[in-house]
Image (cartoon, rainbow, N blue to C red; front, side):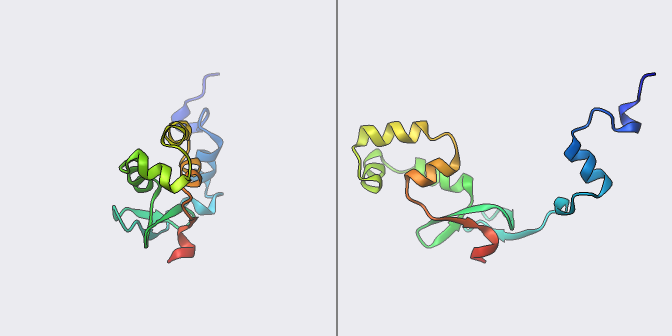
Length: 112
């Protein structure tokens, strides 16, 4: 017997099926915060980063860090320019990049 995936939902990820059946309550998007730089709507559980006096989203934080000179990176980290540049290149997540640049992070709902 061949199942029609359009009818049975066979082959869909479990999470998608849970949303479709209404089991997951957090399916409803709840944008409660706007990034102070790009003005994108963010959900309450989104991680935001403090940059100066602003709380910004991950993409804006990444752009802000990458726009700095390597000498500025080194000043923030207290390490040599070469070492800091290497560490920035190796930071494969936003969280690691924020930790390296000593940025405070929080969930969006807590900085409203």
